[in-house]
Image 1: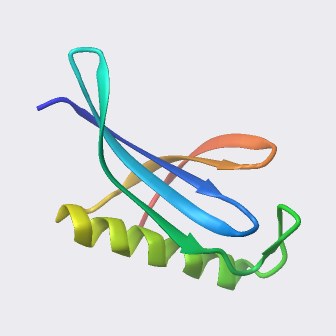
Image 2 (image 1 turned 90 degrees about the vertical axis):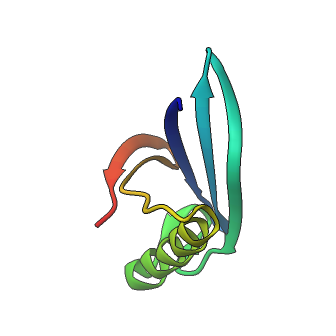
Image 3 (image 1 turned 120 degrees about the vertical axis):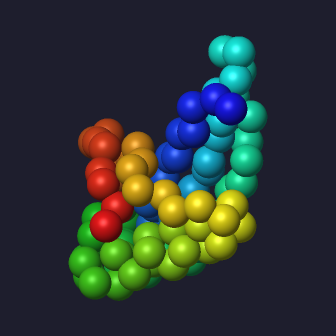
Length: 87
């Protein structure tokens, strides 16, 4: 078993998650989801509660698909790149 990586893109239209596994220097996609993004307009968070709920919904879907709990991800909220822990 290789290392598991999870990426989240939080955009105006959707929240996208991809989970990959790195084996022998190659990445293999294990699962991906796209969920309608709420609370974000023109790349800016306007309603924190709605945007957090969109992310949580996408994470819940990916967790169900894989049968595991995602706890840490790399995410992109333009124009910054950061790592966040999921509680």
